[in-house]
Image (cartoon, rainbow, N blue to C red; front, side, top):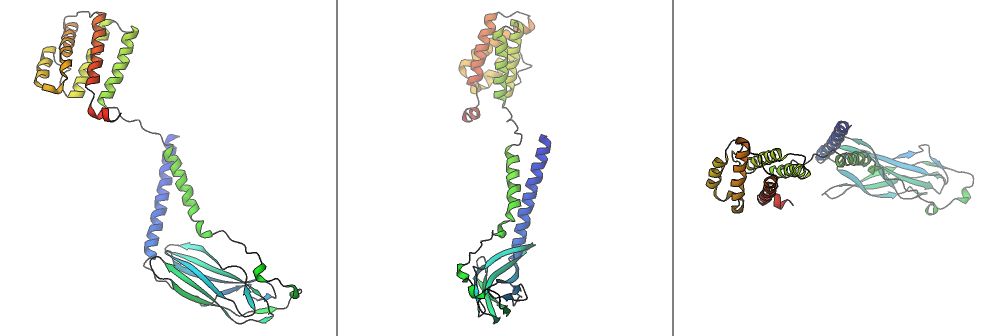
Length: 314
């Protein structure tokens, strides 16, 4: 299951990264594209005209570079009509480096007969540049007489419905992918930090001390375990070849190293390693008091030789 979550998280993050890179590439390409508006007239919906008091929409689709958008829109309605509500600007088709914008305005005829042409004027904005103004004609259309025309409502009294800004919908899948990737990233299995040599020794010593205190180890085995732990620590911590040296050889090395060891710990190391040689080579059985005293001094030595980096990380 953890492997599946890691793979799924990697796939989602890769998909988000690919989408962002694709959008960035398309945006950069669109910066080099010219702004051209080829549509000269809006189309009417419905195209067959309208009855008196019935709404008719004038729409125009404008393909623009991805980096461009439509700014303010001004409608000059045909004579005999009024504008119902505010013009609606949306985009509805997205292609590489381009998107189609749609401007829609609703007209309401207030006089029967054939209208004259109107005009739709709009700005195209590109970041860092002055807006360009374009215009398109609103075609003439026929207005028919309808029943109840004498009870027409004024366009300004009509409630205008505000549509959801569809231009934001493309952000939804990216937001979902980003949220899913973030959740999986936060819930990913965390790897434990690798312990330093000093921390490993502290843990090993704590386990050995617990066995010595509980009496689980006889004195000879407890002392040999303590000796082996201290030899490993001296080799790991100070880089000294201690594990295959006698006590006298180690004392010579220690004297040569100068101040690498605390002065108060040197007598303990001499006595401790000398006792270790007696136990190892002369088969002397250590007394319980020697084991306890050696364990206490070993703990003090490990504490006093704690690296500076360990102190700063606390």
